[in-house]
Amino acid sequence: MTELIVGPFNRVEGDLEVRLEIEDGLVRAAYANSPLFRGFEVMLQGADPRDALTLTPRICGICSISQSAAAARALADAAGAKMTEQGALAAALLHGVENLADHVTHFNLFFMPDFARPAYEARSWYAEATARFTATKGTALKEALDARARLFHITGILGGKWPHTLAIQPAGVTKTPDAAERVRILSILRSFRRYLDTSLFGAPLEEFCSLTTPADLDNWQAGDAGLFLRIATDLNLATLGKGPGRYLSYGAYPLIQARCTATGLWADGAVSPIDHGDIVEHVVASWMTGTAAHPFDGTTHPDDEMAGDGYSWCKAPRISGHTAEVGALARQIVDGHPLALALAPEGGVRARIAGRLLEIALTQIWLEEWARALDPTARFMGEFSLPDSARGIGLVEAARGALGHWVVIEGGRIANYQIVAPTTWNFSPRDAGGTPGPLEAALAGAPVEPGETAPVSVQHIVRSFDPCMVCTVH
Image (tube, rainbow, N blue to C red; front, side, top):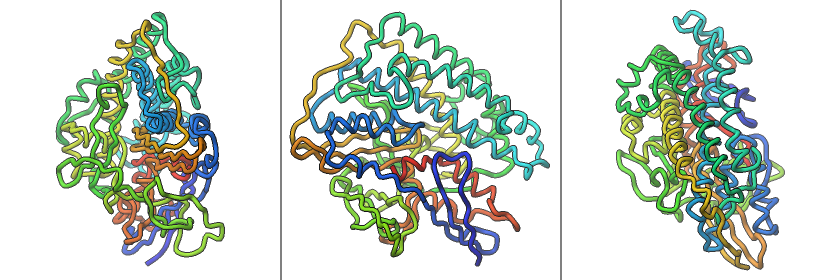
């Protein structure tokens, strides 16, 4: 058996190293290391609870609205406040725009450039892949960046800026769009749809939403999505990087009547309700002191000596004692989309990317519906007042998966603040029972060719999860 350290990874948000144990040309075991401690949970101790709205979005420059939305929900829960109907709609628009942009960025800039590697130059699709996705030169990259920049004008209208907007508050949003701004938002979304229909899907996106089986995916030839699916068939990506087979979602975009997608934990072909009390973060393999605890009772005490059995600054969240994969595929499985359910047993690289493509199409449709429902004559902000002592939970879905904020307020200040980010779930180290996290489990069995120092199979698996390591170690 040999060992190989892979990292740092390019085209990954933040710092990541993976230690591989390799035997007979296959990964026998993997250990994911988040090597940079940041400590936002520590910074928030003793602060005014409202400071969470300012500080937590600074955790990340890619998914800052997700952190903002989770913080606002946690404070709203603590205050017993509710957003106005239009405030919740505008918050969903802001959040959906960010998630949609994240998905498009990941596909075009982070994931697909791997197929422009010289290692694949003998493949029939290589010339097309290099023309579309070579870093800084690919035509797909320019199209995606131009479309993304136009889409983000919506966050300027509703949020003032991106990233790190303060527009989302516990009782609504700070901006009431007027009729002209509503028209402009709809116009921006029409422009983005043209990009999706023409370039990414090569057909009306509703047609991609109507796919129901893996065979349907095999038959999809149009657009950059079709190029990926041809590559996936040729490289057998359907069998690469299978995760734990349990999928968790808190439900995306909480509107007044209900969340846009379902909440639950999918395992063994069925969805069960989530008991938030069953979430525990283990630290035996983390450079942390303390013991396993629910986030309300959890602590963030870094072990400066990095002693013991730890090998990552990431904690190891578990639900009902088990790992769970989170992300776009998980959301769509829990929500019951036929294609996602058909891909659930497959659960590897192809399934994760197909789930993200599916969600791109669905999110565009949702955004158009929400923009049409904006009512400039209605109230977008309600009233709220934080108590001196309370607890609150804020659960949302970032692009990369389930994101939770837990706040404890005592004497009008933050006594404890814990965050479990999507990549904390997916890239967690081992727990007290020695169970590997979802990425670590997915890497087991990956092929490693002789002489490879950064195995392409490992690169594909890691990027299929779309990690955000700065959120992982917040």
